[in-house]
Image 1: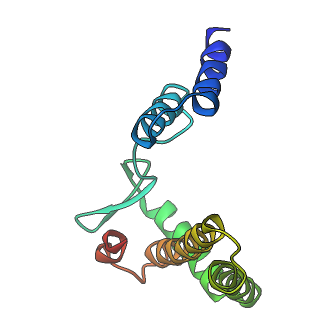
Image 2: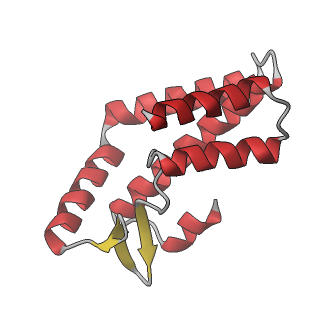
Length: 136
């Protein structure tokens, strides 16, 4: 019950008050953290050459399954075509058809998402190194 009131208060504060952007970000992060809606650590991470999922090292069987699944996704012709089409639409939205700053940001975020997805698939497939993760 208190959580519901807290959520309503946070929504009201974000909509109705003149909070500066840093305060809005702090409020949003606090709400997400307290509602456990946002993971506070990486889900997929490589430390000292060891793959961690949820902060825990992956056993050999799970590593094999992840590697095969990621390689399958990377080599899937339909998925490649869809990924290329989505990237084209993201770039098109962000450059050619943008009607506002929001469209440009959305296009850039979409391209970033596609690049990160590709990088993580390559990591799980064993085709990428940690430095690629840290590059973005």
